[in-house]
Image 1 (cartoon, helix red, strand yellow):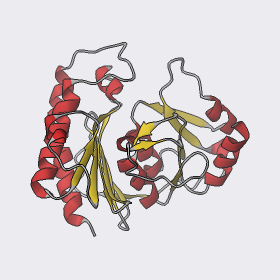
Image 2 (tube, helix red, strand yellow):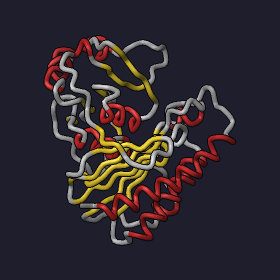
Image 3 (cartoon, one colour):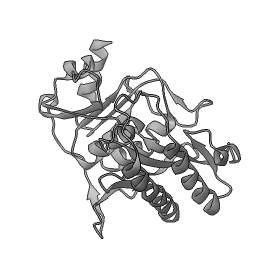
Length: 269
């Protein structure tokens, strides 16, 4: 199911990724890039993706981060909506540390149908379709490899991934969970892919509000790899609200650790 849609999404992301690889090489470092930075590369990447999706699925709605001409002309409402983040982790792009990804997800009547997360700087692909598992393909590998979450059962032995902090310290939530290791990244897509690949065991996002494009593509990677994704209070994640915003945080885990992590969060709230 969704084989055609995945193929089209992968090609759209490949085109955008090829452009971004070149743009990344030529980009001059912005060492103090702020959290809300956007670049011409974001907008060009988005236009490449939207044009490809629109060509193949003109009846589908599009939702994306940048206010580009292609988005303005796109259908805004439909049974199926493509959700696009043309550069997730633009600070990683601007600071040239490699921590950025291209993310494309599609929601079909409220359920996530597919997700693609591509890391152009390091050649990593992670992708999934509903009911067909999560897969990775890295550095030109010809055949994809199935992703399965890491089965660690103890929070104290787990690896937690979180947003890169300014001072290098763990958040209070991470401190309360007390994982064995913490991995930071500017990109939510990368963090969700890490959980799906079994390279991390938990991802915790406690921002008061963030957008559907920040997590949609990565969400299905985790669940199709055998993990679990909810709000920080255990709420189901719902896509396509009126403003496409998420306001209940996000906890993505290998599934085994989910209830224990939710209990730590509850005690800290």
